[in-house]
Length: 243
Image (cartoon, rainbow, N blue to C red; front, side, top):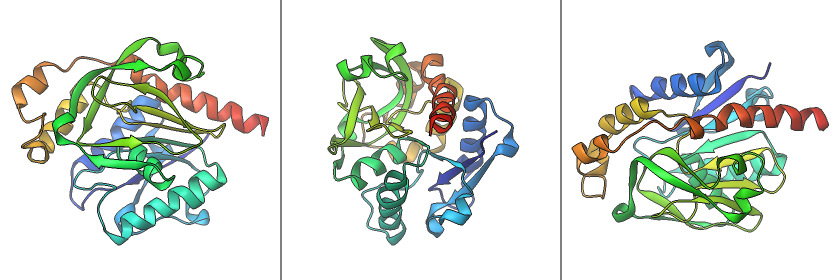
């Protein structure tokens, strides 16, 4: 059975690091022993350190792909030169989604007025209707989100599969590679998203997600989005068997 390497961009001592692991374990329905973590703040893994694992990239806590930190630039180069160039099986949400967009030549902007924190309707695009992973969720499904940055443009070679009312790019597939990225968090259910929001509440002061009560009250379950992760895993396993 495949193993997973979760690339994390979280500060030492951040309780959301272990919480993120638990969320991916639960969403994928895997034994916790099959997932290990990598601290991106200390650099990126090399091929030997990845050991052929499937890659997962989640949120970022205190960081943005727009930060001018050396480790962020190294991470973007890693996504472009290693992950995409080698077609490594990858599921990237939120920070990972934005990283793939920026690394590929697209643009990401800070947009606190259109921050999405909570549960939102995700609309499947025309291209998404034809996608084997996103298509079954058409025309609309619920998903958990937590972000202030967003993609403004996407690179050539990336297909936009979904959108929301505030954000035009919510799910991407890169060519025919086993790489899927979502702005939303399929690894989170309602309770996990509420816990994450409360942990990072200070980051959303001054944004459209500033009102804690209204954000929490609007959160609902999102099982269709969560089902994407085990279906992606099935797709990747089938892809590897063919190749």
